[in-house]
Image (tube, rainbow, N blue to C red):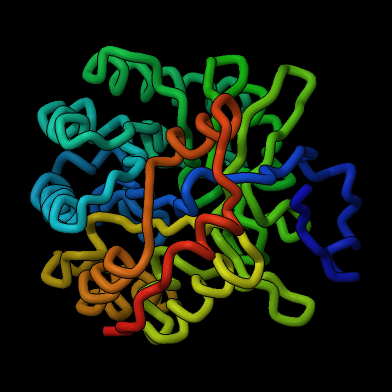
Length: 327
């Protein structure tokens, strides 16, 4: 049975406040998971104090061209991923969602208005979730079963959101980041894929990836962290997750991160630094990751491990030599 370790400081928050679950012991064919949060540059939380959803339609959208850039890159590397689509995007650009689906990718939900869950009431969250589910489901023609909260905003203040997701038929989630951060995080939560059991039912959680350095969980393999770290360091830590900890990692990216020419928005220096830092490196780094590791959509990996006989992740990785190129 897999489990995560916590520091003494992590345990200052009682473990009973954290979602409990059973971690996966096996994963199919040593696969990792790649996810794409389909949102535009003006949707991000970094500029939420400057840009209201009421004004989104005034901005020049770049989400279609940027998402197609991601799709071309994945096709070149024969990779299927999970695309967490903002309901607002699905409502305005349904053809984009069909293009993602036609390329064989999984479609998940990333909310409708990209609002932090812990700033909503349960009723407000449910309303937003149902709007997004309807917008996406009408295009895909099937149930939407994967969810990612805006800015990983399922925290100790909003664990009730898991019950809403279960109530509305969601089977797996990727919203709980087991780190300390000024906007999100649940440091004592499980680091690896696990089943969360709640009074309303159960769902699988696949957390964004971390490695353990001393007392701390350090984020790796996604978003601004992929842009910030030197590529060699990111690949070393991903190797560590696969070969040392014998676990899959989850890599995530936003289409706007492959667009260094996007319009610059006003905002606080920290927000601007987080959003614009190293945008010109994203595509090169992502190409190196796609060339080095094997990926599958989140649902494919979790469903196969829950239903079908799976190859041990240890055995699969041992049979597959890792590449040596670091770009």
